[in-house]
Image 1: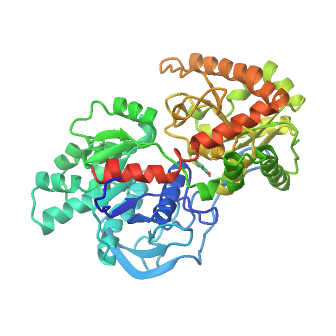
Image 2: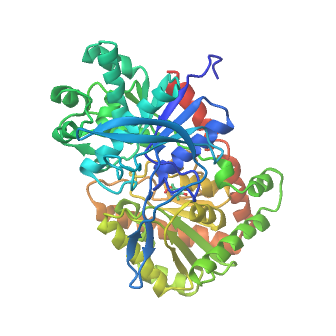
Image 3: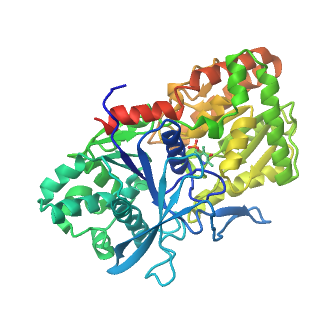
Length: 539
Ligand SMILES: *Cc1c(COP(=O)(O)O)cnc(C)c1O
């Protein structure tokens, strides 16, 4: 570590997963942001967060009697938020919209400032209604609040900032507000202002799927007033046409990072043709251990304690939890596979069911039991079809397959502690990181996964978990890719995982120990924060 004092950082993110009671997150991006804010507090870093106080948060997704997912929304009020007394205004479609600023520190996190347009008489009080609820103009309106409102809130609160960190392209308009300050208040030209703001901005890129990177027609950005007086040509110079938020952020930052080493390679290939962009380095995500990991498991691994007995307690808690929610009780003596992911096609949640000749006997004899959870995006019918198929399998094999509706942090914690193995089978290289596997690994829940996201960095096959698929990729032929990985999965399951679980408990427990000891420091948020400061913020 350098002895230079640390720069102060303002971190911008649309979502924060701090606690299951605080409905401000949808998935992995928010969990990363929440764990980062808690790590900042634990390790005393000069970081504040900027975000949105969502009135309804993300969908509460339930399953109807026909087995189909449906979305419900509730208004949430919180008593753990402090009113700063500060509000700022932004302009959306030419109308002034007031944003009230709340402060949140209730979850052992560094100070988080949340903007809220739900004020009586406001010109638009629904902007901060639903997280990822809408696309197009409504999404831009939300991003104006986060980015432009966020910078104005920092100014009004008197918080000095050396580095602006955009976690995902959603926050890019903060960069436009910084440009406006330089051009209007310091009378710089556009080129001078771009150089000046670049020295203060860093960016974390996430999805390696092109369509997952938000873009808008330039007309729309100007019509909404997000451009902060930048001209059409200037916008095009930054983000192209249509305007891509990720490209804009890559061009307006001094340095960017991908969220795992493999993801670094994928992102550099993906954005290779973008000129004048910042360098993309790789800083692998990490987790906040006190939130996710049972300290008794780490202690048992470090001090030769009884890992199996400790794990069995976590397994029983999960079985009880599942029984309370579904009425079905899994067998604690038999193998339990955990799987929870957003229902997106590339994650292939139902891959394991592909060949009934192989999987049906394992489920009928309960040699294999599987617990699923995961939501589909409310507007994603394909994702909803995947959830419906998982529910169908749960109804067909009620003693062996469970689907838990409304995936949240409480379910995430239960499953990554109480399962025996943690399955992940994305189409490589489309999983950016996959922090749930880190939670599992540190809890002694053995990863059984494709070599994607973070797993290639940790996996020692047969020692601390298992890989399958041997890093196979096939962009051209999806069917061939799936058939290849399916065969590999069944092979490792039948020849290695099942025999080890039922016939070699000693080896299993040694693997649990190796899993915990090989991941507990490398994938803890302390390492990630050190790398952010050394490789991004101070660079
Ligand atoms: C950990 C976690 C995630 C992120 O996990 P992935 O491995 O990226 O899928 C998402 N949602 C919840 C509720 C979690 O607990």
